Length: 372
Image (cartoon, rainbow, N blue to C red; front, side, top):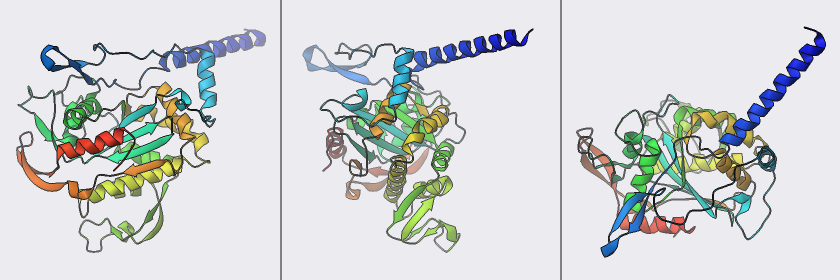
């Protein structure tokens, strides 16, 4: 074969590969990365009763679906990711008015999300019009009703973090949508009226890698923190005196998982780490790296966010800063420690109790973009 024919053949192969890549991007642009989240909707019936139906079958107004993107529109969206959104009275970045995402920190260690408890549970509310972001921690040790499991050993209740565990495919207990995050989302709505749009679960290994990918996070500590469980010295590297620190992924995970002296302290540590990560991602030097970071971790998280959803989140990120991002928390005195028999593990287990009607009230305010 002559050099001219060989060059022509190579050019054709490159063109075919490029066309194939464009077709893949166009096809996948609106597909979620993982199993879709389908929550029931309450429908009125005769006699004032209600029934739960999958939202896809309910007779409710359905938003007009996004049109199938063309290669040029996809390229345009990718280029526009790094452009700050223009201020308007309409939602920015072609997004919804509000998007809520269930964030789960899984203790699974193998990237497959077949098992694992929800080590942390947060809900983030993104207002695309203001714009504004609120992040809320939900105690994982609340004893709640878990739907869809009564035919498995008579299970009807458990800790909130067990809803995620029972829903993941390795257990074989749950046949509904969204796997572990889907069952956790249904449990949150059943018990507290909290309805989320999407979910994203991340295991510990991915969390460590993400922190390292952004070259660590910076935190400020107001009072001494000793991560040595025995509190008798131990490893001096696990003792943080008041001051400023730069943490790598392993150090951030150690802090986020510490529960001394209480589980409420762990929630504060987790919020501290997430806020520090958020601050790092919002720095001008980091924003151009977002697409690369997202591409790096797309295959190692559990999520129903589509690339189109992610593009909207990347876009709205340009309008966020420390002033319009808030971490909120329930008052500690809303909760008290207790013990209850866990029929699944067949042991008495520690839980936290709270007035669910009060939790519902707080969560209603949160969903409306306010906090008491």
